[in-house]
Image (tube, rainbow, N blue to C red; front, side):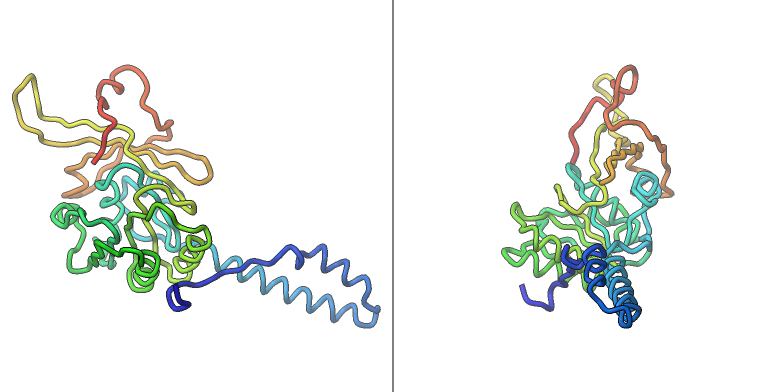
Length: 266
């Protein structure tokens, strides 16, 4: 991967720690001590500024309200990554907020991604870039898309080198884009999954499927989990509604266990 496709961030090495710098100052003659301390302060401030710039932006991207309520920081953060473990539907919901507000999106490495379903979620197809088969150029293609769109949804290859993942994250932070991965990603701010699902409308062998209710759980990188109930017709047609809970991911006992009888997702 060439230098135009990724940015590399390096933090201060242990050899440049403030403790080591103070030990070095002890050998400086008193006349030059003040100048040495000033240079040290300027160097440390420069390094701190560099580290701060490598962190996700505090700017939030537009997010579907029901998902904003369970994501860290109250929504999708520019320069951050998020994982979805078991539901393309949920991944589309994450794209729906930014796309509905006019942002460009890209979907990479997902040849079965349905543009019809995406349109049903309010994703603007005229601002959607599809790369179904990036092949062995996945990292290069993804980094290039980070340069030109606000949010990227991608199916991550089975093996991504830690150094390559770090370079991609640096690119995200530099460009202020967000990344949504299908499956685990080592730098995710949160991992979202469908922990309960049922369909409504069918009686005892009669009726028609009318709506789907999904229980969504977001596990933050800090260890905190939040859960919300999402009605699929509301998400597809708006306005969005939310039932926010700070409960644990699993659904336990009583009527809720019967109501959310299915743990499978699509």
